[in-house]
Length: 144
Ligand code: MN
Image (cartoon, rainbow, N blue to C red):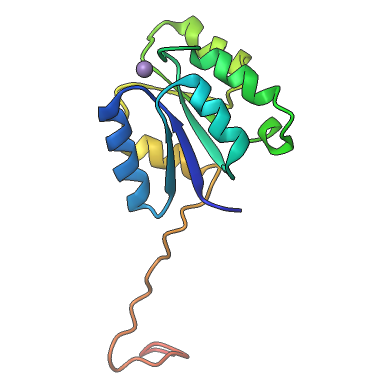
């Protein structure tokens, strides 16, 4: 599995925030500023997860989700889609799930929540560095 994440979002501040947060964890971010570009990129590129804003300038996020799920590209039937909505109304979350999104989170974006939700589907490619201390051996620590 790769680590390419597509974010479909028209707000540049959110785009910058999410880009920094995900790149810090080793993910690669593909960006679309409207719904139609988002669908096109999902169909053209190798994408492992989609972050989807609901309020977009052309087609809304619900329609984006429906088009992605209805795409002829096989992996888009199963690709994880996380809806990000500014709408506090309870019905919007259900609408996002009904359109094919797997989970939703609300704005303002909380970075720890974002990391946790993304990592639930796509493990962080950032390798954990295990420190080797001078005086210890590779085969065992001081008590081995
Ligand atoms: Mn928006």
